[in-house]
Length: 155
Image (cartoon, rainbow, N blue to C red; front, side):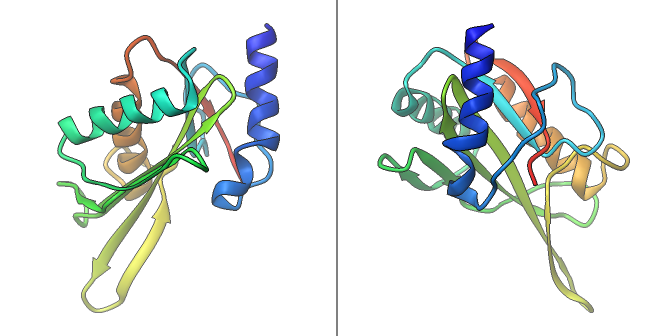
């Protein structure tokens, strides 16, 4: 119980500023409509958790663009996905008390309309840009050894 309280407090206070977010919905055990972040609960330290995640992402073909030890954040280079309008996905992670918070951002180049950027979130059909990219972030989160996943809605 105390770990959950600390994790939630960390969501509200510690991690929000790193990506311009300031509040969250209580963590849920299953994805819910609109969820846009995944918490990976782990007892590992911030640095160890980010290094582990970075290694897992590299094994899956991602390139780490930035791993900031001071601010405990990780950002990948864009990686092409093979569905819908062939978006590229950027995965972001920030260490929060009790684990990591992972989000995704996709970009689609619509030749006639230009580039469109959207946040990975649990809405729409499975292979939509929103839910499809959310599911990829979720797959990467599930790779974390011994991690427990929780789902949240960030502003």
